Length: 175
Image 1 (tube, rainbow, N blue to C red):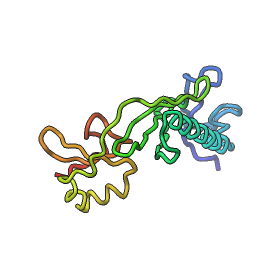
Image 2 (tube, rainbow, N blue to C red):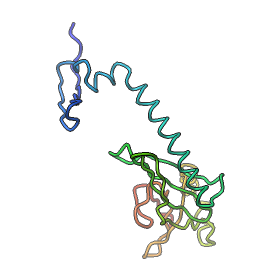
Image 3 (cartoon, rainbow, N blue to C red):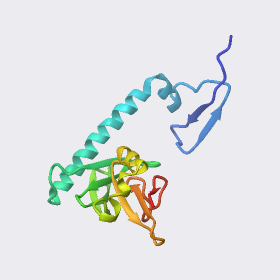
């Protein structure tokens, strides 16, 4: 019985922007998809872990140079479509800030110089933070913050996913 047909994506090593999708044959030996199917994912995974270790080390050193405590909480996350960049979210105490890390030609970290106040200690927000919806959000969120929009509604969001102000896909309206 012939093997089931399934899609294979071929990426030309000579021209990475040239891709082909096939439903009837396996990828040729030596192509990137062949390497991934034959165990290349382990190599990719270990290189990803290594780059995360390097990224976290560079951010920690950059925060130390900036006078931040060595226990400053931060997160390094990939940037879509660019494996040589990372976005960094830093917990500064009463606010969060973002920064950028890039690997070309060697790792460099630079704080973005912008951020957002957490506002989690506002007296008006305290009863809202006890709502079941808010408590569930706080269990899930790593970098929660509260903002009030122009219509005086109160929103809780996670700075990892926040767009300008209280908006973004992870925002939850509390009032």
